[in-house]
Length: 86
Image 1 (spheres, rainbow, N blue to C red):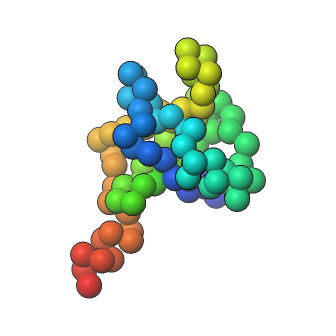
Image 2: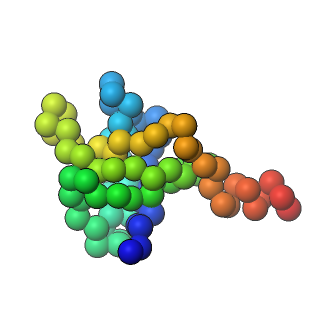
Image 3: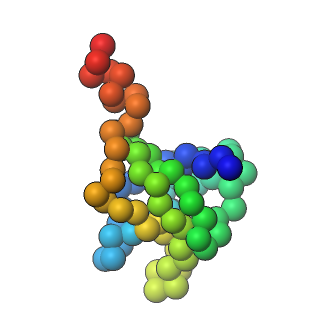
């Protein structure tokens, strides 16, 4: 099963440390890939330098989709690793 890769702003977290999935880059990636967010959905979230898998949840407190991630398993994105190795 393919895990989709979606942009996320790692500085846009809620008080519980979940990534809010409401920034423009996220919305564009979701639309481009035809992804409709669902509770429990597993996605890979990336920024310019980081990749991490997360589980989608709906935050009723903020009325926005969020991603639960494990900050201990953040990985450097492949693009950054390739730049460093060059």
